Image 1: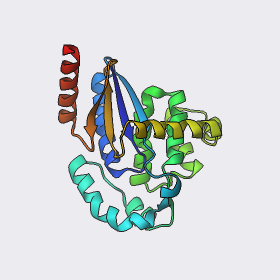
Image 2: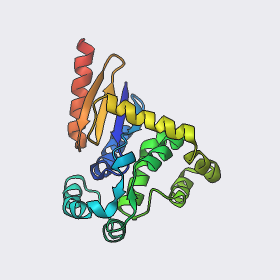
Image 3: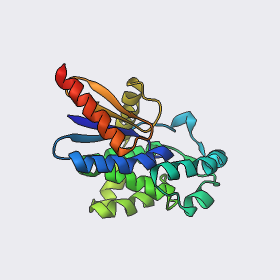
Image 4: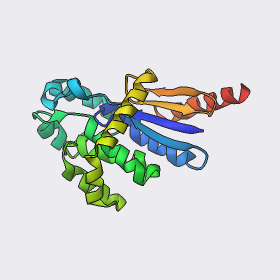
Length: 211
């Protein structure tokens, strides 16, 4: 049984949903495998400065806070958001690919660290220095990690992950899939509270056992 979390590092609702997935992982770590895939929400020609989304995010971030309990920091809302910093999902997605080669069991936690760095601390996910700070918690080799962050093969591998997610028909984030070994089931589309996620997974397992 494998739980696959499909997210994007720049997605505000994913920032709210990742703590739910972390709780779910703690509850089921012995009985279920956990994986996280990057969706490639803002890449290539879709990239644009944060300032172009500022008015929308300033309106909508309170909905995310109220429904999920996460907080957006002033450093993000007042400094990064109005800036010309580019919104680009690729580099933090490559960072996740690199991280998974070291500590796959902590990948969801690292994804949340990136989200918190962006949405609360207002740090750029386009800068190597941000990743140097984040990986110290996990005692990873900094220079080696940064070298891999610029590795063309790992960039290609990450883009293949975007393609896989697209092939599954997932175009909105967050989402979650339960792989029972026989079939893939969509068990979350958009933010989903822990109790509802658990109920959906229980229903899928029950149905799968009947087949």
